[in-house]
Image (cartoon, rainbow, N blue to C red; front, side):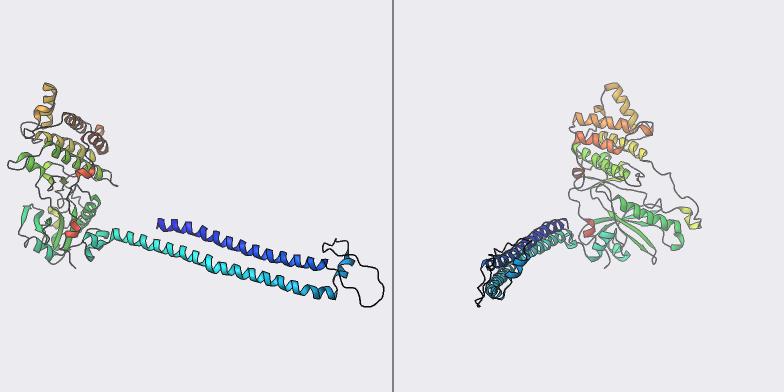
Length: 462
């Protein structure tokens, strides 16, 4: 649109300039005709009149030059004789013909020059508009991303509403259980394209056990998850709500490389080298900054290594385990809609900062942050006091590390775990400090081969 306006703005002055030039030419031709007529009259005025036929003697008339002074009205009257009028008819007709010919030549110039030029300019503008339209459409054609009609609508309006029958088929009749909790069950689903998804379904099986508050929380949760939409978050792909049989389901991405906890603490999993861990740290950091800067801001409820999953290229995907814990409560079946069913108080962003500092310490040491015997933070402080370095606590699985990066990581850990929450930095400040040394941008921290899950979500009902 901007280009079309620019071309139009250039074209209009050019057309006006050509038209103005034509009008000037016509005025010039008309002026020439008038001057020719005036000159012809002056010529006739200079011709002396014929003497009268009779022999009566008269005083000779003065010669008329055609430039009569205004004080000689008598001379002007004597100039208008019948003979001089007849003599002036032929030159006047010739002058009129000259003006008519000039006017016709001007019109011909308009026909053969101005009109083709204007037509050419208008045609060029039309071609530019069509080309710009084609280019604009080519960049947003939904089928270029593999989206079907219903998915195109869902892509614009939000996450799609899915069909239970097709979700059930993708999850092998809901037999492929990943984990079961009192409030909900997580299934693993596989689409016909081979893409794996995580399906979280409430354990409530009757609408009588589902209160109005639960329904409101369910919808608010969907809206909140839609707002996050970050590449380092296990994003919501769709949901299902049906009454017969009673169904409340959320469908999420499924990172295929296990959890960060498994790679740090469970034997048999692929060890993470230093750069992998730094990339995971930055992915988590960028995600936290994103949700903290939303309006209104969002704090992640629980941030630990068991809720951070890894993609095929070992990028971090932070998940949330309270999808249903905030929706379902045991006493909701009693019909008491006035109670506050929040199990915990709202998590503050400063609590996220502290959890992030402890997570950094866990990632570089490969040790659990808490145990019955000690706190990992206290152990690190003692190590610094005794040796002056955090290096003795590094994970033995690390074959190498970068001392300069390790120093910055330790500085961030100390800032994040300050006792006074108000003294803890913002995630934007933390990310600036880390990025200056680690040189890992949001693009590098994001999954490199993350497919467009919307395009692969073939279980959507037509």
